[in-house]
Image 1 (tube, helix red, strand yellow):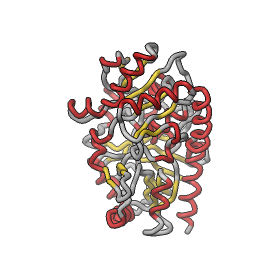
Image 2: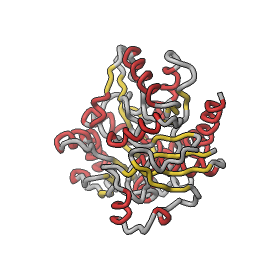
Image 3: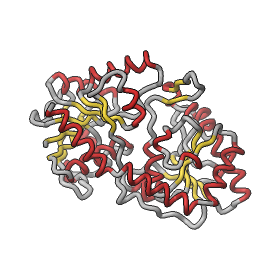
Image 4: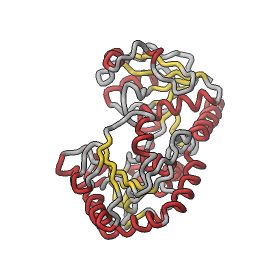
Length: 365
């Protein structure tokens, strides 16, 4: 089967789009497909300029990470995309490139997407979301089983469950002797960014007073209150080696102080959801034997391998502190169990095989 991926390459752009593009390419190639990664040449992604910027002579010199997929450039009008592709995986989140998706759809390409959380829990709103997806794509590989289950009320053969997969061969524990805790920071304005990690800082100060050898690794900024070591935003697979594989515990930000807050929905039963949120780092951390601390409702429960020891009811610093102490005291046991469960569910070779089988059946129907 011939498959095209509209996405990114990690040597030209950091971030989850590039990682997912590569993992789709590697996995589907392993399963016998002929795969081409198409890099859109757009106003936000000038491929030739990026190659020059990073000192890469040509597309042929871009890393295939042990695989044999092809890499080509496509213009925003779709020229460059082989008309014989059996289907296209859309792995771009840039609004400037949506015209390319529309063009490919108009030309008759079968377009597949693996989105983050889709549904809000409100039927009228979710029905409109479903209809919008149905208009824009031919097949939705829902990354959450919850979304797949809730989609059944709107239709039976458009949304299927395909968990996101990651490379378990390089997500391997490399933990220091003493606890190391990882955190990110909101990309919003500085005041919101500080509020987004308030629960981490306040609980961390208390934790370090009890366990002074506890260290913090922070993305984007140094957090002076925690004497954290700053890790710059790295590419694939360096990000795993320098951050994910090292940390004992990952604590997400308070999403109320982030761009995700615009997707927050409070349900009648008092729970909440952030539409559009997935947090790849949560799954990657667990695949590398790390644990997660999150507020109930923030991270979908199906992404947390041991929810009973991972969730707090609020981001009160004492509550976060108590759960951190429990995880640290039982780290060896919890780590092994978490990693085993995560690998069973989120190995990219399994998930890409699931995707390939489901789309193949759909194309034959």
